[in-house]
Image 1: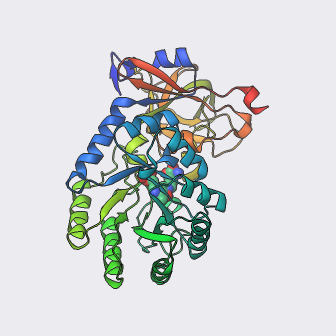
Image 2: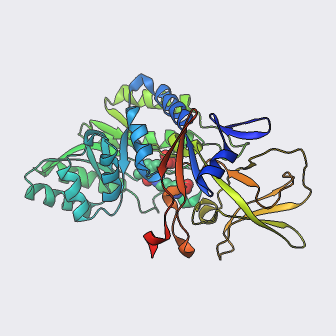
Image 3: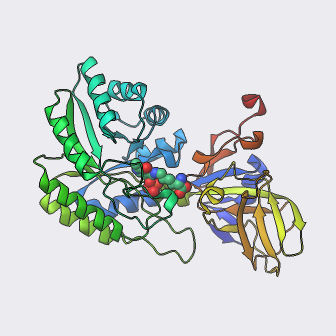
Length: 404
Ligand code: LLP
C-alpha cells in the first residue's frame, strides 16, 4: 500500500476506485502482502520445515483460506464450522489440527470422521470423550494434549492464554496423569504436546521460557511425541513504534530444543500471516464538533471492526487522498453505533477532513471481519481481494433480507 500522486493505492488499485465500485465500508486484502508474509514465515523456520497451520479464527473467509492453502499451509480450527470451512477451502485433513477448550461430542465425532491430523485436547473430560467416540467408531484417534506452561506472554491480558489462571490447557500434574491415561487407552494415539501462550507477542523471551518448560516436562516422561505444536501468537506492528518479533532468535531456540527432542514442529499462526494484508475502507458520514474535539463519524463501526472497542486496540488510520492541509483539531474517529466504545482512534495533527472523504483503517486482516457482528442490525461489509490489477469479490455485502 503506498501513495502515488497523493492517492492511496493497494497493489495497482486506487482506494477511491474500490469505494466507488464496491461501496463502503469494505474490507480489502492484498494478495501480494499475503504471499510475502507466508514466504517470510516459511523462510524464518526453513531449517526444520515445520507444518504451518493457519489459525482460521483470525480470518474465516473461505477464499482467503483457499489462497493460503495454495502456499502449502494447513489449518488450525476451533469449531465444527471452522473445520468445515477449512475442508471447503480444500485443506487436506492431514494438515488440520483442532484446538479449543469446549469441543462438543458432535464436534469430536465430526473431526474423527474427517480423519484430521490431531485433536488437541484440553482437559481430562475431553480426552475421555474422545476415547468414548473413538471406541464406538472403532478407530485409534490421534491426539495432542495442550499444556498450560504458566508462561506470561507479556501481551494484553485479554489475549494471554498461557498463565495458570487462564482456562486453556492443563497444568503439569494433570498433563502427566493424562499421558498415562492415553498410554493405557487402545483408542487413543498420543502424538503431540501442544501449547499456545497468547497472541500479539513481540518479544521472543516468553517463547524461550515456554520451550524450557516443555523441555523439562518431556524429560520427566517416557513418551516420544511425534509433534510439538507451539501454537501461534507472533505479533505485528500496529503502531509505527512497535518493535518487531525477532524471528531468528525464536528459530534458534527451537533448533536448540530440536537437538534434544526429535519431533516435528507445528505452528498455528493467524495474525502474522493475514493481519497486515487487510484494510477497512470507510466514508465519513458527518463531522460533529464539540468544545474539545471533532467527531469524525464513519460508516464503519464496532460491529465491523471490534478490536478497538474490545481490547482498546490501536489501528492506524490513513486518508485515501493525502493533502498538505494539517488540522489543529483533535479528531475522534467513531462509528454510528449506540455505544461510547464505538470509536477507532483519537488523533491530533491529522490532515483537514471533510464529510464524504474516505479514510482507511489499517492492519485489520486478522480478527477484523472474523469478529464482526450484526449489532444494531447493521449489515456485514463486503470483502475484496486485490491481486495486481485484478479485483475479486470474496464476500458480498450482506443484504437486509438475510437478516429479516
Ligand atoms: N492457536 C490457538 C490455540 C489460538 O487460541 C490462537 C488465537 C492462535 C493459534 C492464533 O494466534 P495468532 O497467531 O493469531 O496470534 N481476537 C484477538 C486475538 C485472539 C487470539 C485467540 N487465539 C485480537 O483481536 O487480538
